[in-house]
Length: 124
Image (cartoon, rainbow, N blue to C red; front, side, top):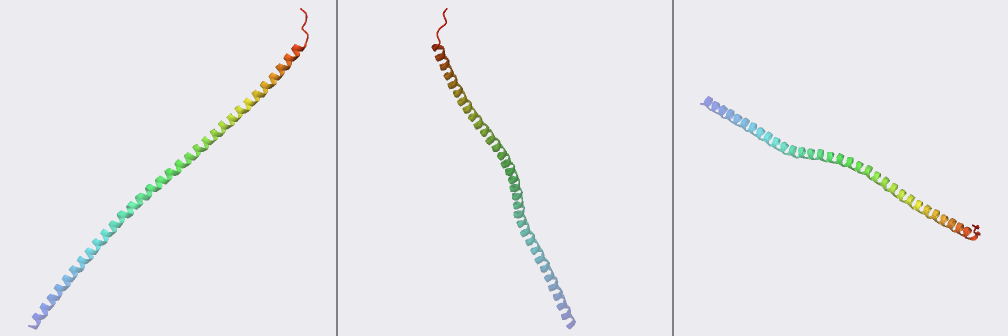
């Protein structure tokens, strides 16, 4: 009877150990699944952030190139406007020079008319 009780006790103990081991494996498996799910969820967010960062980097580079081109084009426009202003000034200078020459020519023409009128006419 004692040996039967001992065998029953050992059998129950082995059964409890197996049940405990099964529960431990299930708990480990569940914890692993939970951890993987959490990591996957975090990885999706990190991957999206990485993709967004790459897009932003590309946009920044594009914007830098465009800003540089715009700066060069603006410098060309400024140069052209300055050249145009200089040409307008030169036209103004030429206009003033032409007025001055015209006034000098009128003065000379008036003087020549005066001289011509003041001389006696040759007899014909």
